[in-house]
Length: 160
Image (cartoon, rainbow, N blue to C red; front, side, top):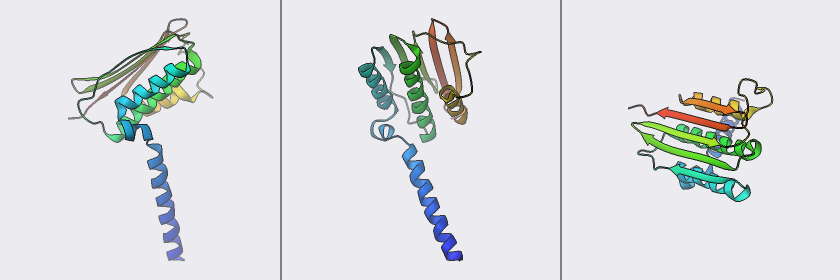
């Protein structure tokens, strides 16, 4: 009975490890953060009538995997939100590092929304972005105005 329990626990642990590995995106593994984000933007430009203006600078040092994953997923969700909800004609995207601070900005010229009256229930995109930022200790700001677009800014400071 103990052996059977140990085998079941090992199988469960193996399954959990496989699931966690699968959560890490193939694009990040194959391309790295900068090129994976560029690929998301290129894809957006190809499938939507949205002009992409991107400034992606090479990061000075490799990010910890959880931080890289959070930046990618926040960028991915933000770009998808522009595609699905913003009715924008242009997206501005920047990623860079200055003085140990990684900054990513995603801005659009779309319809915007009122963050104060934005329904929390049933809308998991922004909440997920906030949770991912908090999980890595990053500062996140979401600014939006009706008919003026939305800007999402993420700052993460490297610990020396």
